[in-house]
Each structure stands twice: as C-alpha cells, then as structure tokens.
Length: 75
Image 1: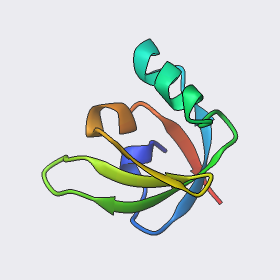
Image 2 (image 1 turned 90 degrees about the vertical axis):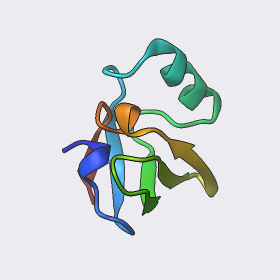
Image 3 (image 1 turned 120 degrees about the vertical axis):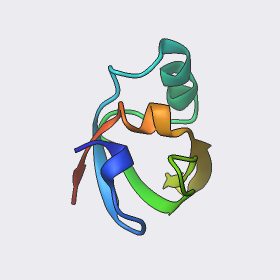
Image 4 (image 1 turned 135 degrees about the vertical axis):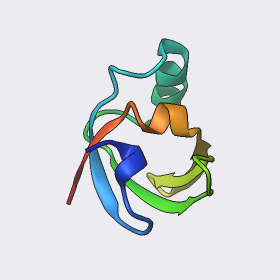
C-alpha cells in the first residue's frame, strides 16, 4: 500500500522510499524520516492535495505526488 492510500488517523511503517525523487528523499532523511519509521496521517486535503503527516513527534507536509511513491504497511 502507498502512503496516499492511508486513511486519516491511521499509523503505518515506512517500508520503501526508493521510488521518490532523490532531492525529496534527502530532505526526508534530513528530518529523520527513513525506512522503518512510524508515520501517521493527520489530514489530507481534497482533490489530491497535500498531506499533513506526523513522524517522530514532528509534523510536516508532503505533496500527493510524493505520497503515492512511498510504500507503507499499516500496523
């Protein structure tokens, strides 16, 4: 399942970041977001808008285009 398919409020483990843009991946790694991290979808904007996410007690936004390339598993 991809991050873009995750329901609001659910928590998942990131299992693959290799499909996203290298610059975006580097930024996520700078924030401490890597494979194996737990992520929670706080809110999703309509019409394939941005996602509000929480990882390691920090909130950040991510575009739909990147979210659909991040593989996760619901825990």
